[in-house]
Length: 238
Image 1 (cartoon, helix red, strand yellow):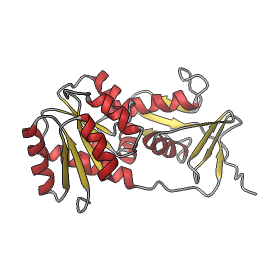
Image 2 (cartoon, rainbow, N blue to C red):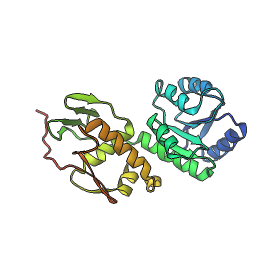
Image 3 (cartoon, rainbow, N blue to C red):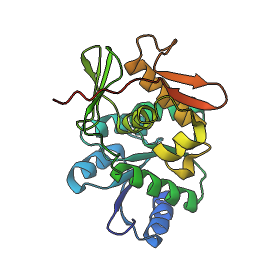
């Protein structure tokens, strides 16, 4: 996986950049670097990295603002690095479109593992259905076109939201444990990262449920997992 994959490391601390670059190059990655957010945005558009490792605390514009700008230019996977480990910062980073969030200090092995997992997710193609799935009169999902219509209006899903919805809908009526969903959607390295799952379940409910506080599609089974409501699938193709 690492061969020919280019990683952009963005950090204003040269020693941290060297430390990360050395460990990634030992794994076979090609590494480029940027020392500030503006340089990072330039390299994303010019050099097309496969993944960005982005520090949050930087002197010109911070990582959050940098990611906002990157997301206007590219869908490149981004892993945040930060000395801040509070959940509010994790949620903010993921909400802005980060693919993962790693707290300093971290081990080189953990960073490499996270990078490989994110790259796998970015290149994994979910199995497609050959027909539209009409859950009920309010929710239509076209797995082939990756379109979701809620009460006749298309809603935009992030790639992770789509993968999570795909797992839930294609297993409608079945209870899927937290560990199962985390492994299938994020990867086996994330089996204990329950906060990721809670966050993205919230995102999905906000987008497809009429009342996210009283969901009718994505049902919680306290302490066990989630299940999608049972429905009779009808092929809408002629």
